[in-house]
Amino acid sequence: MRPDFSTLTDLLMGDAQADRVVPPTGFTATLTLFSAAAMAFLAVFALALSMATGRLADRWGDELARSSTIRISAPADQMAAQTAAVLRVLETTSGVASARALETAEQQALLEPWFGPDLPLDALPIPQLIEVIEDQSGFDADGLRLRLQAEVPGAVLDDHTRWRRPLVRAAERLRALGWVSILLIGAATAAMITLAANAALAANEQVIKVLRLVGARDGYIAQAFVRRFTIRALLGATIGTLLASIALALLPSAQAEGGFLTGLGFQGWHWLWPFVVPPLAAAVAFAATRTAARKTLKDMP
Image (cartoon, rainbow, N blue to C red; front, side, top):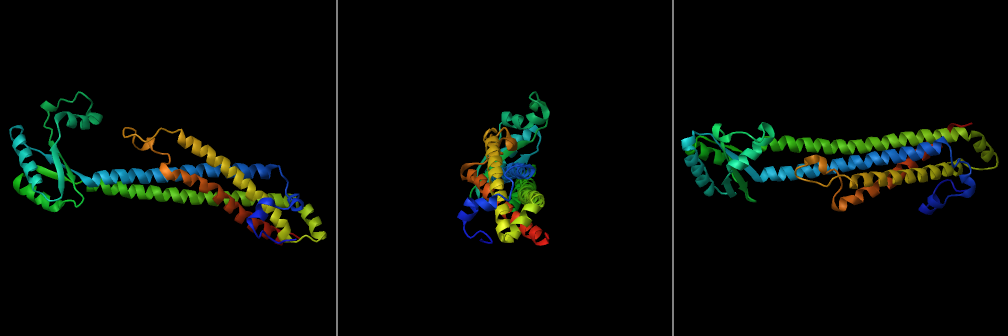
């Protein structure tokens, strides 16, 4: 009688006599299947959330890093002249790919979410905004600020640094929390499968004693438990992964107006990541069951 699995075939095919030690049904089987399915479902969503957060941060970070805004506050009769002066400065600034003054309708669209569609821009002292797009080399923000301060005192450069840094920092933390959640899910799966394996071993104590009397070694007995619980975890995790993948596929696709809430699914080759979850769940079940079986059989009289 072999003490443990030597090949993957041993794990998949098993031993018909040893398999009779583990009951094919019962609360331990149901607990293992349900736990693996539920944890795999949560793991896929945690993985999708982590990747979606990373994509969103990369997209926003790139967009903000390439664009800047110059705000001009000046009396109405001087606004056109100062706007033209700023555009001339930008034309001679190294690293600026393009610059344009926003139209009134564009500025109203930016303010509409906060003040509504009927905002009377003509009657309010709204600053003039200039959109600046930098090239691959980028421009010297400090140097541009000094030039604007000297030539157009009413112009203020905002390179979005104060918005970009908190966004990137928050995204990194969310991504890290996603991976921490996956680790906790794996640990919880191992704990529940360990409890189920211990319960099955305790329930079959008399059968185990009889097997020992006829010459069965503890490794042979543990083999049956490890195989059954590993396959159950693999099956449950596969079901949970499929359900989570279907749920993610049914979510709305990424849209600019929907922001973060419409980009929670996987994209491209990232759809291969859910297929990693069932084998990982099986590996966790294998390690947890083998550890529990060896410890319990060692302590069992």
